[in-house]
Structure formats: C-alpha cells, structure tokens
Amino acid sequence: MLHWEPPVYIGSSPVNGYIVEISELETDKRYQFRVLAVNTSGPGIPSLPSDPVLPATKEGTNEIQVGVDEEGFIYLSFENPEPVDNPQFLWSKDYKGAPDSERTDISTDGNTSKLILTNPSEEDVGTYAVEVPNTDGVSASHMLTKEELEELMRKSHDVRHPLIQKISGWNVEVLENGDVRLWLQVEKLSSEADLEMILNDKVIQNTPKRKITFDKENGLIEIIKEDFGKEDKGTYTAKVVDGKASNQLSVTLTGEDFDKVYDESQKKKKAWKKKQGPHFEEQLQWKVTEDCHVIMMCKVKNTKTETTLKWSVDKKPLSNGQFDNQTGSGTLVMKKFTNEDKGLYKAVVKDSRGDDTTEMDLTKEGFEDIMQEICRISAMSASPLKCKGTADGIKIYSDVKYFMESMNPVWHHKDKKLSSTDRLKSGSTMEQVWLHITNPKDSDRGLYMLELSDGKDIHKRTFDLSGKVFDDLLAEQQKCKEEEIIEKNLATIMVDKTLCLTCHISGDPAPEVSWVKNEKKVIFKDRYKLEVHGTVVTLTIEKICAEDSGRYRITVKNKYGSEFGQVTVSVFKHGEEPEELKNVPDITADLESLMTP
Image 1 (cartoon, rainbow, N blue to C red):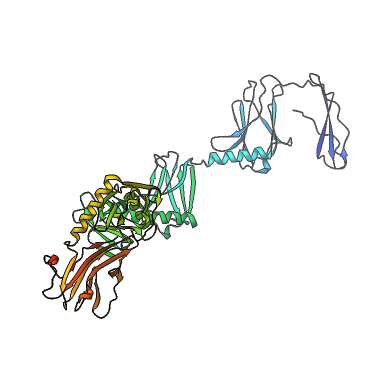
Image 2 (cartoon, rainbow, N blue to C red):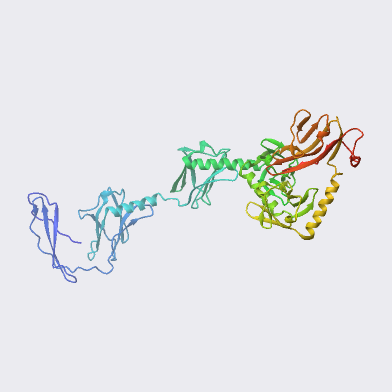
C-alpha cells in the first residue's frame, strides 16, 4: 500500500486526484514511485521519487475475504498474519478514507476484522483496503464490482429467505370414483410448518366435499375434490412456511386443461356409480356355432337374486333371452338368423341398486359380418354329395347347415359348368342344395361337382354318377314312377264338388307363390280362387268338372332358393271311379309344407 502527503501548495483549485508514476518496472527488480497531484488545471509538479521498492508478496500474507454470513449479511474480512497484541485495522474505500459508517459496520475479533455492508446497494461498489499499523506493512485490498455485489445480494436473500425445496410440482389426477386429486411434494418439514391454500386469490378450507391434507413429515400437500365442477376452475396456490423458509407453488386449471379433467371426472364418476349396482363386465357380442345358430352373449357383474336382464331389438321386447344371475351370463339364441333379425339389440340389467345397458348394432356391417360367418361355416360343413332316384329322374344333393344365396352354388358335369335346362334344374332349400336330372340318359353319366363359396375360399363336393350307381338309380326312378299313383299327393273328387288344395309355406324374405296346371299357369277367376292367410296358401276350385283333372304344382321362390309341391287331381262322375283309384282316401289334398330360407 502506498502513502504520501498532500502537496504543500494546492494551486488555483482543490486537488481532485493523483497520478502515480512507476519507473523501471521489471520482475525481481526494485522500482520507484512518483506522485503528481491533479486539479482542474491539470497535473502538478511530480514529487520526489520514493526509495527503491522490491515488488514481492510476503510469505503468509492474507487477502480480503468476501462472502455472506449465517445471518445473510455481506461482509469483507481480513485476518492479520502477524502476531500483534490488540492490532488495529484501518479500512478505506476507494483510497479516500474510511467507508461510510451509515452503510458499514466494522468489528474486530482478535486478529480478524470484518466490514459488514448494512444496506448493500450499487453505492457500495468500489475498492476496499485495509492496513494494520505497527506491522511490517501488512495490508490488502479488494475491488468489489457491481456483478460481484449482485451475486452476493442474491446469496444474502437466499440465506435470509430460504426456499423450501420442491420434490414434485403440482400433479392432477382423476380417481376411480371420479374425485379429482391435486397434489405436490416438498422436502420434509418441521412440525411448526404452516400451509395456506388459495384458489383464485381466495383462501380455501376443508369442506364436506373438499379435503385438504398437509403431511409435514413427508412434505405432501393434497386436495381431493368430490363433484368436481365449474366452481373448481382457476389457479391453485400452495403457500408453505417453515421458520424462515418458504415457498409458493401454483397450478392453473382453465381452458382445455380444465375441460379434459372435468370430462374424465364425469366419465369415471358415472362408471363408478354404475359399478355400485349390476353392470356389464362384458358388452354384447355374438358368435356363430357349428350348427349356424347365432348366439348373442354378455356378462353381468355384481348381481343379486332379484337382478333381471331384459332383451329387446329396435325397442321391441324379446322373450327368448336367457340370464343366469348366479354366473351373470346372458344369452340370446337365434337358430335361423335371417334378414328379419336386423336391428339394434339392447340388453338392460336392473335391480334396486341401479341399471346398466349394452347395445349392439346389427343393421349394417354387424349384420353382414354375421351372415358372412354363417356362410363360411355352412359352406365348410356341406355334406358329401348324395344321390337318389325320383319319379321324374335323379336328384343329386348336399346337405348344409344353412343355405345362403351368397354361397353361390355352381354345378359341373365332366368339368363343364351346367346351366338350367328343361331336363336339368338346380335349386336349394334352407338346408339343402340340389340338382335334378329329369328323364336321365346315358349322356348324364360321369363325375358331378358342386362348388360352394364361403366368401373367401371355394369348397368342392363330387359324386361319380356312372356304372352300377347310375343303373341302380334308374331302377329306383322306375320304382318311384310305379308308386307315384298311390302317393299321398293324389286326389280324387266327384264332379260338382269343391276342391281345396292347401299348402303351408315359410321363408325370409316371404317367397313368391305360383300355381300351374299341366305346366300352364293357373288363371284365378270364375271358379278358381286363391287365398293367402299368413303362411297358409289355398287354391279353391268350385263346381269341379272333368276338365279340371290334371297335375297341379305350387312353386315357392325367394332369393335363397325355390321348392315345389305337386298333386294329381282326378275328377270322376258318380259310379265311374276308376278301379285303380278306389283306395285313394280323401278329396282334399294337403300338400307337404314347403320351407324356404
């Protein structure tokens, strides 16, 4: 540290500074100082040179230490390295004398002196120096910059206002019952810690539908809100104080964030309420059995003895549904699934605790999916081709579980695709696909093949109609011809009587009905009348005469196939009944029921 006396002659104006000249500045060499006083007129005459000085730091020399103490005060501290009894410490700022006593507090403890900035601000920026008289030039200095002071002030604030450390910020979750939980976690707190919970600038407390938990041991802060609603929208702030330490943590639930939580809360609340009573553990679903029966299934949980399950389609009750309230299993079986079964199916479970509903739409894609599955199973399970003789010829057929038009049956003979002709007729019933050969010839011998589609793959069935098989079928056909006259589809009636031919039909869609007599279409007028009552079709001929004799045939047809039934009518006069018809029992023919898909 350099010292000099002020100049004897001041000059025209007061001294406002000094210039120090240093000469011969080299490492490990001595150098000299000269001082020039400066006023408004400029520098004055230089002083005499100082004695040569060797620049070197003495061993054990200390620097001024700068920091923040436990109370948060900013300090500059210096320890005298030389053992001196009751040492004095002379502090200065910017080499202009002692620091401002209103802004600093200096204390000495043994060989150490501490300068405290009592109200730190930018005014305290500068160079602080300290020297110890009566020693071998013990001194030190430190330039306190603006940046260093700002950092010290931040540390001072942290010491005086410590921050409670956050472990986890605010978390928002919706509980299973629809309650909303907001929680955060800070470091472990003392038993004296205090919490203030604020919503939209208003302090909130525990209520019957809002529980606030403050677990000091684990630092857990929690809000559980029942019936979360619009009044819970806004900013939540937790103010935590523990001694001098504090923290303030906020979370905002507005806009899309609030809507998302609210919607999830409502959904879970509804589901929770539903679970308190009977509810569907498994929603409505369907399957097709190997017999092509369609089964609708659902599973109910939390049932009681009085729990009921009711079925409906398009709001129309279904009485054939089954429900086991012990296992909770519900089933609805449809043995013949048709176009009439399209609709919106619903199952409602109910008891005194509440109800639940499950639905399945079988109007479009759902219906088509079922029909496709029925088609697949039926095509795969088609029986091998069979053959039998009839009064008119030979019938080749395959039994199926459930014939559908989409199975697209195609017949082949000797690898050639067959088309319907007068002698070759193909058709189907709900449970059979057939090819009828009228008046069979030798050219009809050979390998027959039926192709059925399941919507993806083609399934083939074959039958070799040749050799002894063909001969045996011709013999069977001849036998059928001989027996035809005594079959039940034969009616005799006396002239002037009334004949009623009745047939029971069914099908979905409802089949078209046509009548022919001796291969000519029947015209319904005068004595010929047609009546249809539900599934019963009746052809009535009044005042029957000999001209009405012949073979009558009814044909039913829809998109799934066709079938026919026939009866031979013989009209005779009183006393002229043919000998071969004496054993025919009745004048009313009841044709076999015709079933079409």
